[in-house]
Image 1 (tube, helix red, strand yellow):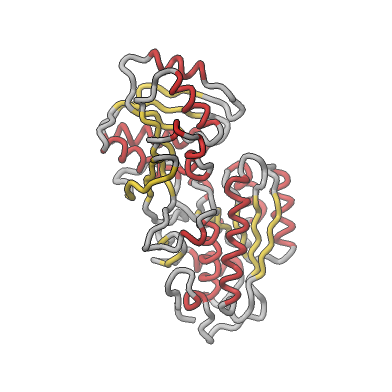
Image 2 (tube, one colour; image 1 turned 120 degrees about the vertical axis):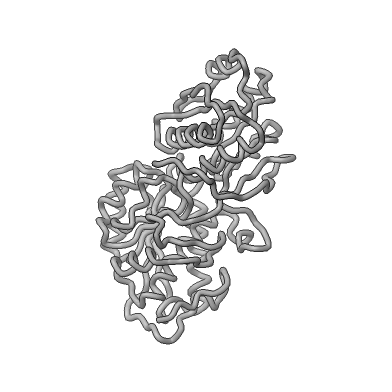
Length: 366
């Protein structure tokens, strides 16, 4: 069947073209992490995916049949992830949308074992992108977003930085490492890394040590998420460190850093998209990447005239310049990490504001 993809979210994009009729409906399963740590992405994401499924089905479905959609909670637990994934496969899903973190994403991939494509909706972990195992990200990777933030920061004239990192998950340790490598490649200096735990509720010791540095850094980078970010910002303000620019990655966006109040004004962070006249984000503002994942899977089924897992994997791996909710996406030749611009946002008067978008010129190796 020919590729009939058209405008984002439009009926024309995913209406069957008449040459492709399925006997079996495309069935998508979402192995959603609705635990305390990851519910910020997967709760709205699972709902946004349902909305996109409904839009496609209202336009005629795929292959003449409505898409079927099922959500199961993996509870943030690796063993539960394996059990839930097997349940989805036993239920007959042809494709799976996966959770944001590697501790559950890897067990999911081990269980699927290439039988169906897996798109990790909110993950930026490069280890979860592996087309040979049928694994793809819906977003850019951590090396890309951290390098983009580093390039932006250095371009603003900030040449001396520190980082905050946690060994509790690769997201919180990898991003500071990638930022440091890219920042130093640009010509900057990263003078110190401060460690923290995801269980910490106080950063006074780190902030006191930060205050003692001479000279003071111009910028602080972290992959921290709310509510810890709010605590860090408040304690930095109390210590008189408001001149240090705080920059972060997509966790600032996903956990709504601007809800921290006035202390969040002036922070900068990477984001996947921002509502503009050139995309369809406004209608999916809660979790546009889930909409992207459904559109990619539906497109793969349509162009391959199949719901067979390995066939869908091959079709996804050949996608070039497909228009989805957040913009355009290419998987061909990208090793499972789609080529996408990184949006840089800041917080102004308690709300996110667009600054720029870029693809970094230097990307660290994962």
